[in-house]
Image (cartoon, rainbow, N blue to C red; front, side):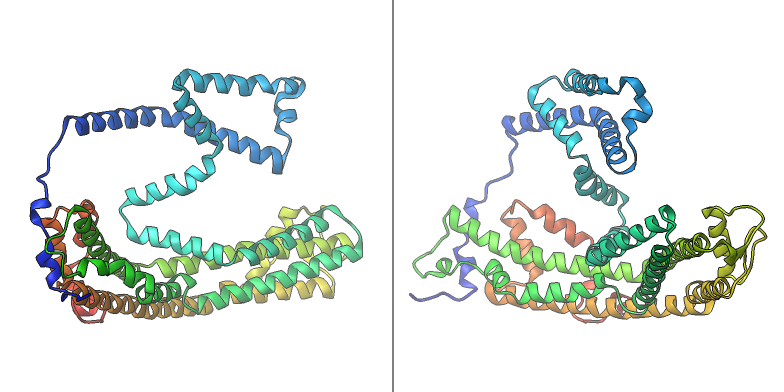
Length: 444
């Protein structure tokens, strides 16, 4: 069957099928009902948030910390069922209708999911800060990417700490203390390594965008159906015209979304976020180093108290103070290293201090990380813009219009999701859409 040229598709578009916008009474009633329902949940959400927070705090504390029922309720612990029954009655009294009552119970039971998937993203959106959003995404991607290491390392450290605190067998104390030192060394190595390479969050953008644009699925998604090119079709019917608009709109929205994302990365590059995260990682390293070294010194003390000199039996807090002072090469009056082994641990602590909090190494790591991230983000932004140009060329090849012209024509055809395209377009500066692959800052 003979195919028409791309430009002939626009000759088949029937503008008489485009109806003028109208507001029916049914639509108005639906909006009123939606507004009423929204106000209903808005006024009662604080009650659900309080109950959800209390319920999950109770569950976590009871399972992982202590038996709160016995500690708080004492002899009446066997009657806690009536407390939960009272909460259920409260929810029934507040929400009344069966559907709303069921939704309220579901809200409380799934409260952690509600916080992670709705409240936090909503808070990010209300902040109107793309930099804050990207910073959160960066942190989440780092946690998810390192989850296997984090779980294993945390479990080993917890068991070692438990052995040091709860047991007094010399062999066990030696093994646990050695394990803590090994884990601390690995943590220091990972922190320094991460501080001198671009983050995983930045590197993943290039791969994701390039694979998406070059995929066969994307090509099929943004290309018009081959049946629409048939020569016998003089004018589209409603279904054919909707298919045509949908495929064109998908290409336009993909192009707008890519440029929008590239511009947000450019804003992220200009922000001090990478420096902040690097400093935060070193601060967290200091906390872990102090706790780890305090545990090692406690293990040495429990194995042989004669390794230290002290006036009163030292507590774990005293060992924390001892390690903090040793990080800077100082001492405290409450505890002193006496033997060669204890002195050696003190030297190790000072070396850790030099690695972690040494001003020269820290400032060098921060500067190098910032410059590497900036270079990597520039390259990523350029890559996304180049892929956007390729997508623009694809649309012009398939539809014989540029992205700007496609937006105008979709507006004439009253495309239903035009608001999404307009939202993205308004947040992309005109100078950022230029043909150059250089960053927006260089164009200014």
